[in-house]
Image 1 (cartoon, rainbow, N blue to C red):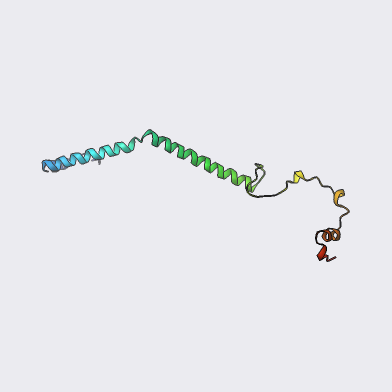
Image 2: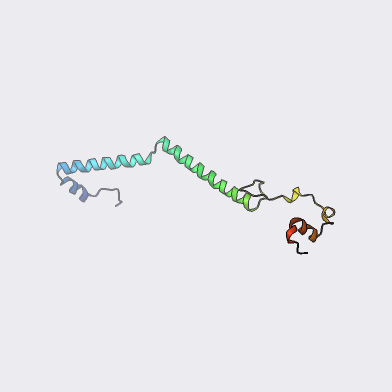
Length: 118
């Protein structure tokens, strides 16, 4: 027999109880039934809170993924995260003719005149 079926032995045991004990069993059954019904049908507010929680979790997850992709590759999105001061190679327009007359000695001497090694 299945779990939800009442056996004749169980009915005989219930009938042999005192009326107060039978009434207590009936009340316990009714309370358990009402508690189970209450759990099955959540309120409208709880449904909306659950949906909101799931949406916020999805958006947060997507935000973290997009942020990681942007900071690691830099080629998907051009957003600057943090205090970075990098220059894009596309923004630099320097040719060899612009720098061909500069020597290392002259450059180092202009930057550090006190410590001229050359």
